[in-house]
Amino acid sequence: MNTLFAHIKNRNIGLSYPEIEGLLYIILNNRCNLKELIHITGIPEESLLAFLNSIKHLLSSENREKIVFSDKSREIITKIDPNDYPWRLFKPDEDLNEYEGIFKEIIERKRGRSKRELDQFYAAPKTSVQKAWVLKRKGLLDNHRIAFLGDDDLVSIACSVMKASSDITVFEIDKDIISVIEEYIKEKSINNIQIRQIDLRDSINNQNSGPYDAVITDPPYTKGGITLFLNRAIQLLGGKDKYIYLYYGSSFKTPEKILKVQEIFSRFNLVIEDKINKFTTYNGAESIGSCSSLYILKTTPQTRAVDEKNLSKSIYTYENQKEEKFPFVEHLVCKVYGVPKGIITSRSSMFKAMGELCRIHKFKVVDRKETKFKGEGMSLTFILSNSNLLVHTWPEYEAVHIDLVTCSPIYNKEALGDTLLSLLKSRNLEVRQIE
Image (cartoon, rainbow, N blue to C red; front, side, top):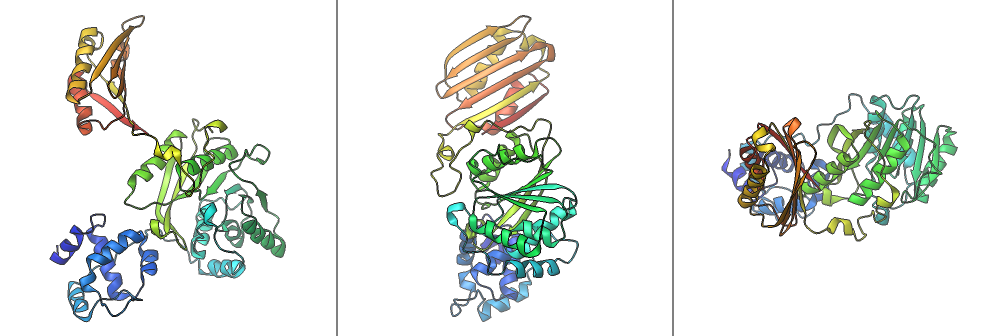
């Protein structure tokens, strides 16, 4: 690996070597500014600023409007001959320029400013057309029922440009967006697009004319926002094997946010059938690289909407998201299989094994209790100084279920599974972390 790349890599831990090559390739071949570089790469502004700072000795100090190499640096980078990088893998299998041209002409100057109080960032026209194209390729634009939960990207209009025959309903809070769509409907005599003005924090019982075949949404990027919009989508779909097209973006420096979103999907028993990274390009939203990923979610027989009282009304990023500031908790659920009968039916063996688990991983036991059941099953309760450990046994299945909750980080958590396998002499286990 070139020593220059290695030096840059050491100062940009979040970027891979191919991405560093790709950035050098862009600067070498394009005179672009920071905003254009964000749009090309989908890398968040903060990360790009750090990268540019790490190569400032290579850049021309004379040109502040464009990012360019100095003459000497250009010679050096040209000799290295960096490779281009495929920043976005998604490519439609047909030319969408004609659709994009028609769409841009329709919406030209019709939308006002994006409203930050509604977490709006308008997608580039090309993106709106691509959103519609994905629905077309999935067969949803012909004789289906589609619901949009918010449509500030005017994808409903893009669908119409693509000659959609499906019935489309737009649930939208913004009167200005509604006016744009209504004007289009009237001007083009469209009869398969309906609009329902609604704040989705309110119940949709009186608004739901479902079931729909698919729901498309780009919700507020908060835990409360995504949970609420997914709940509304499930209410509108009302069944299994239906689809939700959800857009979500975050900085690669905050992978925990993506994990949290995936946890929300799991909580609703939704399957991620497909994911297209860096699908959407926005005007603005530089903190997340001006882009978001498309998640194609499929409902299952276990998918259910949650009770209204469990939904947060604080869904926008400017609001104080108290649920995002919950005290630190680690919650692990372990299923252990193939535990020998001599251990799983023995009170003393189980207490010894769990006591040793606590010693190895530094859980201080304050109290412990055993509950016996008919047959040979038992439950063990350990009250810990920093929370609790619950153990349930099923000797007939050679199975042990362990529920561990702590309010401080687990010591050597990575080895916890191996510890359990060793202490319980078992052959297999599953460990799952709960949010």
